[in-house]
Image (cartoon, rainbow over all chains, first blue to last red):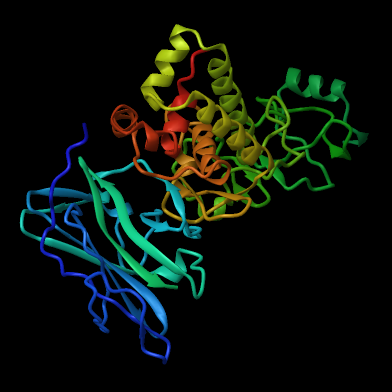
Length: 160
Length: 249
């Protein structure tokens, strides 16, 4: 079986977001109104952290991986310099991926060694890679293989 | 000098005498060893006596002395600059004959890729012990019906795709729609075999057809994916490529 590691355990509790100018809180996993950015969901089994925030009216996803043991990350499965090549965000309901799939024969340069205790964090603007259904509620989760690890984040619900 | 159409007899004569190169005033834009090549039946002016060595009508693949549309031609494994694929292969020029009419590498890759897929569908239908073992290697306990459907969708995609030379530092990529891009590293790949040009075509078409993704890359990791997580393996493009490249005859 593929080895799974708890790489990250310290992310924040649930949050929510405001919609438009009305200030309506539409999601709050804790039952409390927490009208602040960024937003994220709780998942104790997740080993990565996904946060969403809005910048200039666009949704930006931040993926954070904290190595609780030495890790080798695949660059092609990470947001790097604001871009990401693979469909590493899963949506419910499904959202069409409009980014790139690539044929690679990985080399050492494609691998990022993350020593124990260190953090990788990268951001990507969702609208560049996903045909977000404007005005509809969706949930996003980061999911990708990195070496022997299947890295999965918490799910974040938001209105596209 | 002789004027008129070039005939097979002229070619035979030059081959026999040793040709220094025939010239053709129609300008086919193809130069072999410094002389313009001609086609049988081309009108033009050329020497009746061929002075020295080597046939001018046979350009060897990869010859540094072959220019196609002003760009030096290179072989499929050469490492010369491949910017925009210019200078790599002639775009199927009808004016270049290398033992047979030349063929564009993207055209050949598509044909070879389709053949690979056909060779992959056959064992999925035949399903003998060797076929099952090969399936297990790349798709684990995945659904044979789903894999078969995905290969058929891959074939349909590849057969009808708009295949273009891309500019990324990759072997190929797919960004939606009907277009498959073969990128810079593609030109240095072997025509066939593991991670060959035909297989790269299959990989990219697996994205565009059935909608496969890239969970893992490479032989070892894709084999592991098949054994540990077959539900993902049957949606991973490299697994389709590797299955195809090693499909039992």
